[in-house]
Every structure is written in C-alpha cells, then in structure tokens.
Image (cartoon, rainbow, N blue to C red; front, top):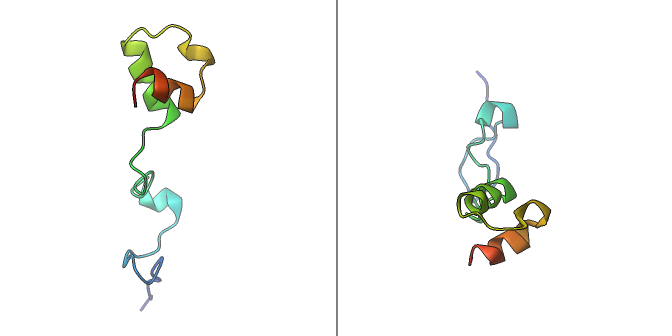
Length: 64
C-alpha cells in the first residue's frame, strides 16, 4: 500500500506534483488576479497604454 504525504501539518491536503494537481492550488492563497487577467480587463475597458503597463500599473488603472 502506498502512503500519501501531506503538504503541511495545517493544510491537510495530500501532496501531489503540479501536473497531477492541474492548477488546483494555483493562486489560492492571495486571491489576487494575474497580470493576464488584469490585462484582459483593461482591454475590455479600452484603457490606453495597457500594453506597456506592469501588473501594479494595470491594477491601479482598473481602480483595484
């Protein structure tokens, strides 16, 4: 029988390699949008200069 390691003592989540997780824990801690998500929102809102903005600038332009 194969034992399953746990990621941390507090999480209680079984350890899995990233490809098997399929992004299940990706960005789960901070719940902040990625740069790509911010860029997509800026594109929807037609914010000028978005292509040269970094993540913080995009967030500020979106009022976040």
